Amino acid sequence: MTPGFLACIAIAIPTLNYYVKFVILVFSTFLIAGFAISDMLFRPSWYAKQRKKRLIKTPPDYDGAWRIDEKRSGLNDPKMDLGLDFENVEFECGPIALPGNKLLRGWFIPPPNAKSSKQQHDLCVVVCHGGGRDRRQHLRHVPTLHNFGAAVLLFDKQEHGLSDGNERGIGWFSYEGSDMYAACRYAKINRQFQRVVSMGTSFGAAGALIASGHFDTAGKHQVIDGVIAENPPHGKYRFLRDVMHLHGAPLFIPYLVREILAIAVYIAVTLRRGSASITALQVPDPLQIMRKIAPRPLLITHGMKDTVVPFEHGLELFEEAMEPKDCLWVPDCVHTQIINYDFAGWERKVLRVLERVMAREGGVVVLDNKQC
Image (tube, rainbow, N blue to C red):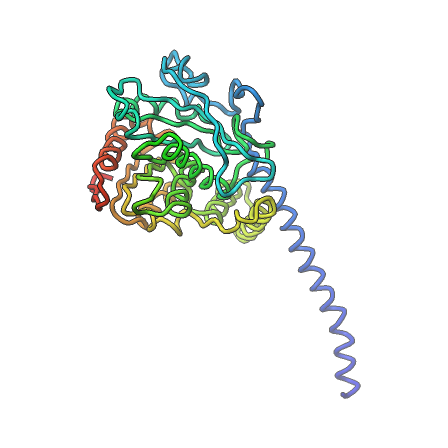
């Protein structure tokens, strides 16, 4: 080597070290920011703290959306708010449980007008709330389901309501599908229902989809016979990316920074949930399992003004799904409030799916989706 070449190397090495240190510093900064943001996403402002013996009196950021009518808040129990008898139940968590979590808890509400014991075991709709909420979010849906003759099981996911947990927050596509599958198995095996439909909103909707397409298998021994998903998120990275852009743009955070933050937060969320339950890393996004739900009837509903889970999420999931499928897109509707904005449309679509579920005898039933 010539003296000139060696001199160039001597000059380049300090410069290279500077750039390596700079890259490490930038990467570390974004990763630290990702972990900090992930903590806010696990426990957002509306995440309701858990209580041992009773549900929290008023959930944070409660805006009256759970109200049944002007006189009934939807914050009590089936007896107080609906005049319905119910049973407190508990059952084991599914394949994925955060450390220390063993039991899920909820309300089993039998149909009040069943004429025979057989009718009491025909159909059960298992309903799962959104992230940070609890079972009461769906009390306002019970009357319509009961009018069809279905029993209803409202339950709290782990880390929510009265189910096991230590306030570790929202699952972010880790335990939601497992919890829904466990609840549906309880309805079908322990309660011996002939047909079971999984129904949920937001992260509960993601759980309904994942339970059906990942933990369950369509066929003779299927646990879940139909799916109703309200404003379901598309997948973990896509949802996180949308959150970063939605909240970052008004703060004038540059586009590239938002993109990098989305990756950093995705890594943080995945590592934190994966470290608590390794099997959670194997859970697919809803988009990846949509085709496995068929031939079971599927209904996806979404508000077209949803600013939490953008409308495009529900639309793309619907397009990916196979027949039989149906949808309901509600103009001007915000997050988790389909029934509030279009009760008639929601009731019509839901009852149509329940009818198809009860009519199926193993064959494919094609739903008319032209009215989406």
